[in-house]
Structures are given as structure tokens and as C-alpha cells.
Length: 383
Image (cartoon, rainbow, N blue to C red; front, side):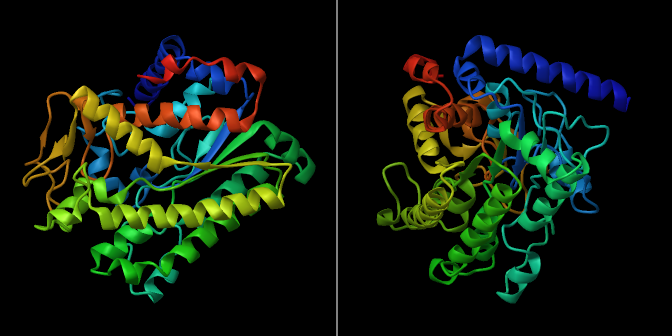
């Protein structure tokens, strides 16, 4: 049964790649970069199936059950959505298959590996505990994932020279990671002022990870920032205010969006400095914040639901932290493709697809892979 499911999974992924290539020229633009493998670290935004293999939390989580995965795969894969994620679309656009999870079984790692784990933090659980912040989801922080990556890369190479040659055409995605450090802090009642000192430490560990990749021969590194926290049903439910001045024109909480901008600006400054120090390497900032704002405008234009979670129960935003998607009482919307948010914390496949289009359009020219990238029609990005 497991072999049959794996074969079905491979067939579905191949079909997705073909559909993506034939329906969007974004696939062809990243293919001009000659990327032959992708390595990813991160959290639930990009986990393609690692957390569900962790004992005991992951294997008993809601991500092991439908409706997760129901739109695209028709069965749960460990992705925290109804289907594909941004990292899937990035891989497809480079002509590569979806990244297999490192903790999966019988995986083919020839074209890359995904080390991301849902619930992961940038800082270790020990570092967070010293700040009275607990992560009860997973201990697979950024450095744990980086250690997995190093073990894997060196196990497939004879020496440093061979590894550097192997990585010349690879793409590294360092995140998004760090959002949970702040999420857990806010859940425990810390204020934005109390969470702000975390920022330099989180950015510092992300920068350190990028430096390690440069040291072993990485030539193309993308470091994504965070989406606007204040637009998520999770934040809008937990920090609901009767003061209309707390909200922007999209009914997002301004103070949390301002905090997202602040942490992203600190990260961007670090990426710029890292690029100055390493001109031989392409180091790019992945602007998830503005990609989300673009997504928001597309959803408003098309009449999609931008407020409620597609899967959930109760309240103004169809979100209850104690009865989340996957709970027996939770309901699933009829058409997830017309919803921005999936479960209150994560987005729908359709939302991730739109975000991925914006991101690829932003990234490809900066990678300067070939002259042909400048000929891409803007029409291809409308989706």
C-alpha cells in the first residue's frame, strides 16, 4: 500500500509540473537559471512532510489527516495546507520535482531535499526557554535542520572540492524561518516591545546559516522574510480590538504588521551586508510581505474570502485555537480556491500559487541567469 501511494504521489507531482509548465511561463524563466537541485530549511510554510514523521507530536498532528492535502493530493502529505506550497511552485518553475522531506522514507534526494519542519523556530528551544518562551511542537530548530543538511551533503560527496562543484548549480532557501519564535512569544502573552529583542538574535542565526552555506560552496541563496502577521485569522482572533484605529484598510492589525515590517527590514539589512561581503554569490531577500500584499489585492479584486479560514470553526474568522482544522467539529469551505487562508495560520494552495508567481517574478531578474528572462510577459504573472 505504501509503495502504491508513493507511486501515485510521484505521478501527481509529475502531472503538476507539466501543468505548471504549460499554463505559466514562470517555469521557463527559472529554468534559464540552470538550477539542478534545491535545498530548503524552514517551518510550516515550506514543510513538505518532515513534522509528521516526528514522534510523538508530529505523527499524531492534524497534518496527518484530511482535509490537509485534500485539494491537490487527495490525501495528507504533511503539508500545512490543502495542497501545494510556495516551495513546490519554486521547484516546478525550475523544472524540478517537489522537494522530498528529509525524514521521509524511500525518498529520492537527487534533485534536492527539504529539511523544513512545521513549528520550527530559528532559535533553539534552550535559547527560547531562557527567555521564558516554550516550543512544545518540535525541537527541530534552524541549526538542527542545518546539521541534517550538512550530514546529507557530506555523505554524498567525497570531499570539500567535490561538494563545492556539486553545489554550483544548486539553490538554497533559508526560510521562511523565525516566525514561530515570535508566534510562541505572543501566545505566551509577551508584548511587541518584549518580543523585539528577539529580532537581532533570530536574524543573527539566519545569517549564520547563510554564511555556512557560502563556506561549503553555495552560490545562490534566497532568504525569505515574514508575511504580515496582522492579517492572519490567528492574530485577528487572539488580539481582536474594538478600536477601529487598530486596523488598516484591509482589516489587518496595524501594530503586528508594523512589527513584521520591522523584522523584515532588519533581515533585509543583513542580506544586503552579506551580499556586499560575498559578491561572488547571489544572495537574495525573498519578499514574502509584499508578495502577500499583492495576493491580498488579487483576492479583493476577484472577490475571494480574505477574512475567514477555509477550514476551522467558530468566531468571526472561522478560527478557534482550541478547535483547529482537523478537529472533528471543524468544517471545510466548499471551494478553497476562493479563500486566501486555509486554517487560520497557513494559506490555501491557490494563495501560495499567487504568492509564488509574484516571488518568482521578483527573484528571476535579480539572479541574472540569462537575457531571456527580460522577455517574460507580465501577463504570465496575472494568475
